[in-house]
Image 1 (cartoon, rainbow, N blue to C red):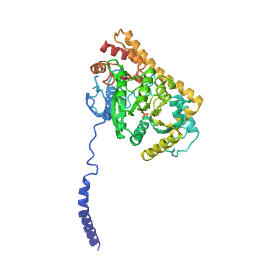
Image 2 (cartoon, rainbow, N blue to C red; image 1 turned 90 degrees about the horizontal axis):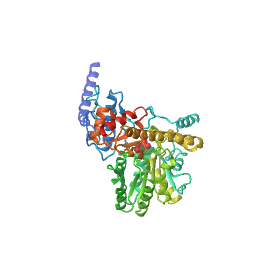
Image 3 (tube, rainbow, N blue to C red; image 1 turned 120 degrees about the vertical axis):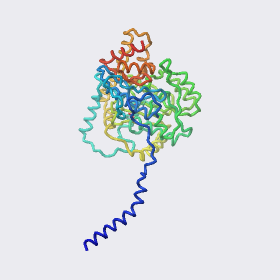
Image 4 (tube, helix red, strand yellow; image 1 turned 60 degrees about the vertical axis):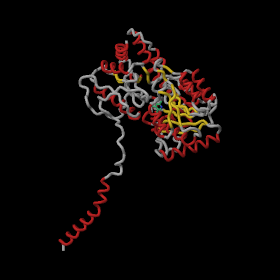
Length: 479
Ligand SMILES: Cc1ncc(COP(=O)(O)O)c(C=O)c1O
């Protein structure tokens, strides 16, 4: 009896196996088998300049620099590369480790943070005391963890808008504002809004060069991306004439992306007078300005001064789009606190815009994270804490400005005959040194100073301790 049962069970299994086999064979080909291998986000250290897509370059080059830096045994080594800020138009030098002990073929970890974030004078990450205090209050309040609304923590978006547009802005009352997933999320939301509702070309014009992620963000929203002239590598300054020509020759009603302050990656901004001219041309041509403000306060140390371009455009009657990030000026990088706003004609139009922003956000990420926005809102809405924060932002900006001055002074002190005025006239976290790719390579090889081949350094990586070595390295190579 028992053996019959076993036999029949075995037979049943055999039948089952026979039935399942063709299905299993079919399943052996995975449903994702047609997903192509994307370009690598990490590359061997020995890799040199290569033409990878920008999104990949952004991560892999920063990773390469950081890994080569880590492996370098020179005690005087300096890492002035940075993450997520590469220019799409320039070649990069991925340094091989020049010093004994450096790995030959090591694999890189993807997206090492490099020094794309602010560092204090000891080269350490910095959490602002005002942020610590706001966070303490948020925690002490024992708030619940329930969802925010679609447009975020209620106290945050309008407070963010006031910071950008000013407390007495003529636009107040007709700004559709929402919390976003930091500056990147704000740009992505704006891109999607343009894709759906901009009546003209589905195209945006960004500066050459621009923050590398801009192109990817807009293209992912199915906008065509064109570039306008911005940086003149011969003068290491603004190509104002080229920019004006491109503004004038673009079809009426074109969308232009402007970096509100501290242009990344060049550190080159238009002067207030140039901004006024740009605004007038945009008015004449009915262009739609989209401002990316990722560094308000962080550039000059004065939030009002850094908002000059945005406020000038508003005074001139533009209805702008604006993305804001609190990553740099509050040091809330990983908290992802940002805002997006559109200036409308009147309250009724703003209501309509607002409804469409919600329609985009809801299926995309439903609602944004609360913690960082609560911290930011606490700072922005408490006059005393706000004043403290402003002083701390100024402290960060001043350190950057001081390092620029020091580097220039040291270069001049060493007897360099080159004009280094661009080091101090540029603004923000990044500086274009004007070093050529072969010079960058030499600085890296001979002096263990790491930065991208376009000659751009992250000033936040410079400290009182290492500026002397940096100046000497540049002087010895450049003269
Ligand atoms: C020009 C520019 N825009 C936007 C951002 C967005 O940053 P986040 O998404 O971290 O706020 C950055 C960050 O480096 C930037 O440099």
